[in-house]
Length: 113
Length: 114
View 1 (spheres, rainbow over the protein chains, first blue to last red):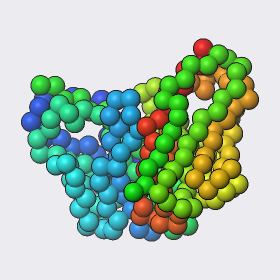
View 2 (cartoon, chains in turn blue, yellow):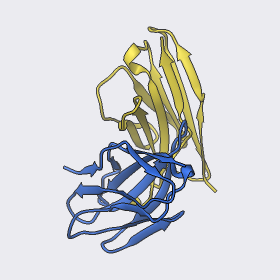
View 3 (cartoon, one colour):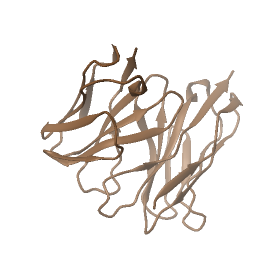
């Protein structure tokens, strides 16, 4: 079956530090991959996505590259801010006849000034 | 543009009372609709999803039910709430049949069962 494994949190960084949140997946075929962000007390928002191998999704300074050879979609940001504190979810969609996304368990990120 | 509305934002209900949470989507037709639950500090659990009016798929046997009386309306219900039903409930939609289309989430309902 399909699965997403995320780096366990919580992760605490100082402002302006480099961020990596690891995500690996298991799926047949060529899934689409997503990163979602959830700020405190809110629903999830799409942060970025990639729909095929070697695609790079980017948004708000965050980037993730779809690596089929390593089945990974790691989230990175070069310099984090306090406002980036949130929970981050990696997700995949298998892209064939299955209407459900599979989510990772989420990684809580806290940025300290 | 498409929008999703979910209400109420917060709800406190006694054990054994009924529940009805409502979600509506505007600006799109025939969306796939989803209900997720997020327990405190935990990940997302898919409860129900629907690919059309009257079509409901249940992911986890539980005390809850879902209905889709109209194309863009999705309702989560319970006849008698349990303490374990407490959590953050999220409604979401995506375009029908579009594999690379992302989910769009509502702002959630925080349910506390006392």
